[in-house]
Image 1 (tube, rainbow, N blue to C red):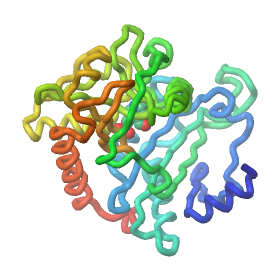
Image 2: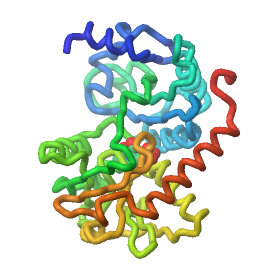
Image 3: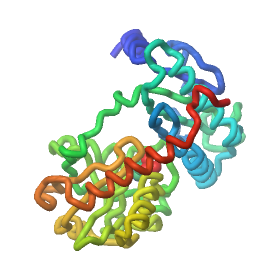
Length: 316
Ligand SMILES: Cc1ncc(COP(=O)(O)O)c(C=O)c1O
């Protein structure tokens, strides 16, 4: 697709770009070919979404960004407060556009280790860490509906072992997930779930996974090598609130095949029931009762958190 086309469609959907603290036109939003995110995938990032036009659990995302940076020995040149301020300012800029005041957005904050000479050594760096914030309408990221559910493939591709590339770090190197996704898509599945080096279920390409059996909810523990999902945490808390037992345990893929219910979680996906895994239909192929209860409680939790918070239009 020619660049001019990209610029036009991004303008039409109201995309806002913040590059190192400057909100700039889309055609000026360029990154150096010497940027280490481009050369090596040497970057960390977060995806945040808004509800009622306000960022959801932004502070938790920024804590995770710091954790990701620490795992890859990246010294961030901005504080969390600075990132928070710039994320909110970028959302406000989006909302200041005609007709977009109440729209919900997807926010991607990407931090590169910087740009400089080609080479791994930090002495090659000629800049501090660089960041960009992309704000897009959430409608750009359509999900399978809750009612429809999703069909997943168990990938033959192993999830990165923590000693190779720790999945707890949300780095710009997503090839492990991306390749699993492409193989699943080729076989007409919606997405893929990966196993760890011992054959235990870890997580999906961009989501965490849960199953329900005889009223008990289970999800792989963080130390199997997964992203410590913010939605996953929220679901565990909701289970506790509702008195639904929830266990963080290792399990093989067969437990998913025979589960009463399976569902996935992520900031943009929220909670989506899995209706098919490989060739096996899950439950009766419809959202199960516990998944439905959790989704209702999840929605209520979001509502109650957002009602208490101030609209970003009035902050900063
Ligand atoms: C690999 C992976 N696992 C899990 C998740 C879900 O995390 P969260 O609920 O914080 O969005 C993501 C989100 O992008 C992800 O990329």
